[in-house]
Amino acid sequence: MKKLWICALLSVGLWATTPTIPSRPIGIHLTFQKKEPPRPFLRRLQREVEEIFAPAGVKLTWSISPAHPSTADGAEIVEVDMLGTCRLDRLFRNESRLSGQIELGWTRVRDGRVLPESAVDCDRIAAVVLATNRHESNLALLHGTYNRVVSRVMAHELMHALLRTQEHHFAFDAGHPVRPRDLFEPARLDPSQIDAIRKILNRDPGTMLARDRAPLS
Image 1 (cartoon, rainbow, N blue to C red):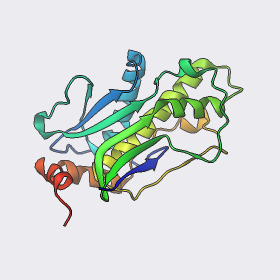
Image 2 (cartoon, rainbow, N blue to C red):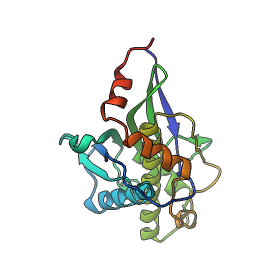
Image 3 (cartoon, one colour):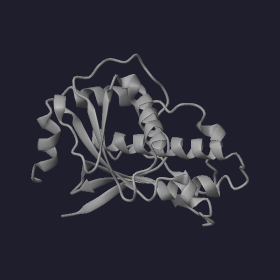
Image 4 (cartoon, rainbow, N blue to C red):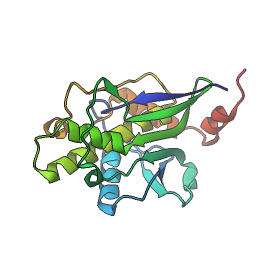
């Protein structure tokens, strides 16, 4: 059985359209590798991811391990592993030098099939934010930048997991800094992404599950 991971990094599409309400919600189930981060971090993460998906009229439900994800209303569940500490203040002394493209998140692929299983690497994101903003003294701005990058990486991986696609790719190049001013504009889904999400969530809830479990022909 061949196992791969889609690696994707930063940002989600460009434009929004008028929202409609899909028939099913998206259930995001978080598992933290280490201690659960502070509540303000979680609230901002949830709010920003919800804002990105709002143009599609999508309802997001959240659960955190060891609680079990809710499948009420036929929710489309995506498992997201949060790697590292997910706390920027724990990494302020990080002096690592970054080069090339840095993988900040990835989604699992098995036998050529994209699965609803993703990961977001909080420590790598923190290292990128700190290394590319070494002279920034405004800690609130750094925290805001970190939270927003985590949110956008998660949203990007959710798109892979929900649409079961490897076709959209974004990369962070360590030669170009992640600057706070570049993140002031909200990330938006483009019309084709919105349409694809709506189609997925208006299908029978067993359709994607059956596809994921079906043997290869």
